[in-house]
Image (cartoon, rainbow, N blue to C red):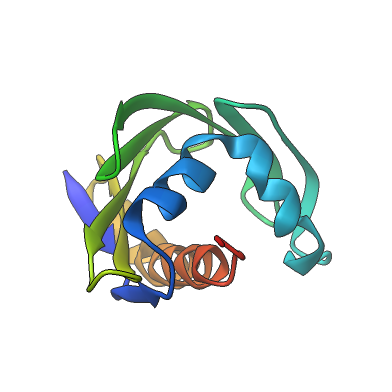
Length: 137
């Protein structure tokens, strides 16, 4: 399995508050207007599922498959040109802050890895940055 990891994002909010927001995808309404309209279309979500059309990739639907309270939220694709998993990991960083890291894991042959490595790394960084900007308090 090939993994793509974001840089660690420092969030000035308690770990429990960040977890509670991310564990219910309805809270993504707070970032919907920050998405690049030229690359992201048909963004929809409910408590457990997120669906988005990303140019030039196509339709991607992610569903939460596991929640480990205050520590980790695991997603899996239910629709995607390339199936993958996404983990959002949270660690405390003092009393009023936490650290977050995103990891994408997918099965790739060497040819596909060469083609998607750069866009996937950039994508995981953008998602992590976007999640770090959510108002958690």
